Image (cartoon, rainbow, N blue to C red; front, side, top):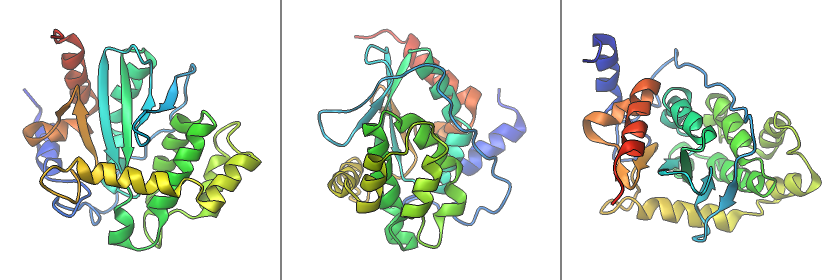
Length: 242
């Protein structure tokens, strides 16, 4: 049985998310725990899937597949990355899970500026350099200061890249500055919108699906508790495959 404090936190988070149809947490106030920078202890495969928009991280043979929908300027995604997501990262490092990322950029329309688009473009460039996972962690660690006032800029994205050993290069810097992957950014946003089903605005971020089953309803709040999210992941991993 959940402790009262945990149950209360879940009650608040159940209806939260970054989307037009979801309750906003933009005005949630201070006190959000800062996420730790992800440091890989071994090489993990990273690739662009055949659909041209999905970024896959983890052992292709991993038994459990988790799909994440994230916008780099969504504070609720930052919350997820700081709280529940470490359970998924640990499973990925153990090669028990792989993660499929769909990167959205709708927050630019709501907040102004083009920071989400620039961040998604930079993350795609980091994938080419084999540094997506590390750069993704740095991006969300710095999200709060880059959420408003237009969000991420070329200068801030390159400065953040300095925190990832081996990422900066003429190729990467040029891709960030010129928005080389603008078409990818547009296509990825369309993929996100299509995932919304009857809602053309998309499913909201973060949206998490484990083995094709979206985590929602009473269990949505479990995404923001490492232990509880871990239970969901382990349950999926231990379920018999048909």
